[in-house]
Amino acid sequence: MVKPPLVIVGAGFTGLFTALHLRRHNHLHSIVLIDPQEKFSFKPLLYELLSGELAEDAICPTYESLLEGSDINFVQDRVTDIDLSGKTVVTQSGASYGYQHLVLAVGSVQGYRHTDGAEDHAFPFRSWDEGKRLERHLRDCLKRARAAADPAERQALLTTAIVGGGPSGVEMAATLADLLPYWYEKLGGDGQELRILLLNHGKDILSGDSNAHLRSAALRAFRSRRISIELLPQVAVTSVRKDQLTYSQADGTHPSTLPACTTIWTAGTELHPLIRQLGSQIPSEHLDHHGNPLVNSRLQLLDFPEVFAAGDCATVQGDPQPALAQVAYQQGTAIARNLIALAKGSQPQPAAVRLRGTLMKMGLGEGLANLFDKMIIESTAGGLIRTATYLELLPTPLRDFKATVHWLDEEIFSRTIHELQHRTSANERPALSPADRRARRQVQALAMLAPLAFLLATAFALRTPPAEQNLSPPQTTGTAPSPGSSTYP
Image 1: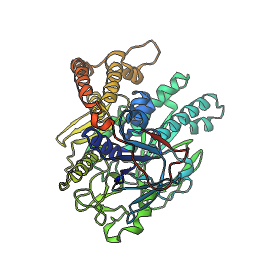
Image 2 (image 1 turned 180 degrees about the vertical axis):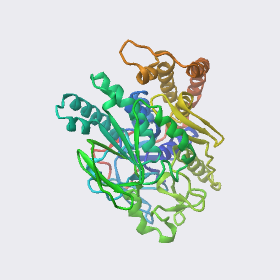
Image 3 (image 1 turned 90 degrees about the horizontal axis):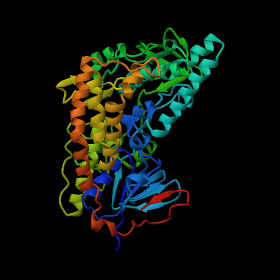
């Protein structure tokens, strides 16, 4: 009798890295990985997608390319229903999958705090398609501004409002304060006409976040951007329209209208609809105050130990973790190890998550690197550490190697980032500061050894195990996928 497969719902950090870790450790059980998206979105590097600092296929590769050569059965579909007692997953296309073990890794969705018009008119920034849509919109606004005869219309087109003073809002503001002037000046415009406003409900940016101790460094980085970033603290956005937003003081007084053709929403998240649907199958005392299911230290649901859940869609009982890529990555690895242990008849072990510090992008080629909460590195050196660290987390060593080569070429030899920051004409090359020259020499030294290390890692890590190559495809129960769903071997 063929055992039901392992089903992984959600192919973000947690789900994808669970599958890849199982593959690399000769896990011979059938794996079905389900996600509605065609491409993986490496969320921490979406700013580099917007700015063009890294290649699109490195940041957002297709699942087909990531899983090529493995027996992982990727299904591009949306899960609409899960029966925890019946151990069944149903998708939008009508397919039904029985499972022996289930991994829930759907994350969260963008929240709009019930703000009038925000969902229709504000731009989220959590995925590849959202990043490309925002880029097209911003470029279109700049082109229209150059042709606008009405000064008020031109100013609205050149005004970008970012809602939310957490890490995403701070990184977005810093990135656009460098990027938009470059784009607009290429069109013949004056970059100083641009306005970028960061609206925050709290008194301080990064308040209550794991990056709170980086606030002073972030504010210093704001002051060194191409254009100034205007901070509007202690305000609440009450409505968003295509060409304006309204806000008031946090206590509801002093309503104001801000003409702005671009509103980017980074303020908060909401429960994923699938997790909300599961709430009726889980005792209320085993849900956190947001409605996410509680899991034990081994990342299993308290009432359904055959179900693992991690990332933004679950809370570890007694040990909640921040919503960081490094946490989701480590939890995915821990789930894979526990699944391997169960397959061998061993007991699963608690997931040990070790926070290695935090990283933030603070403009083109610059960043903040908080290393193990002991050292904060700013500016160009911080940006180098941030990019190199995230490149290490890319889903496969080969993709990591290709992306690193591209980045090193841009950063060391083409000097593109510095040109984007400083040049005023197409032929002008800026002089580097002594600090930048020292940082560049360090990276050049590392660059001589890094490609060799990545090549060796690639040669050993990317080999598909012989035993894995001969596995039969995963079996499903019930209705087969419709022709509209994409299944890759």
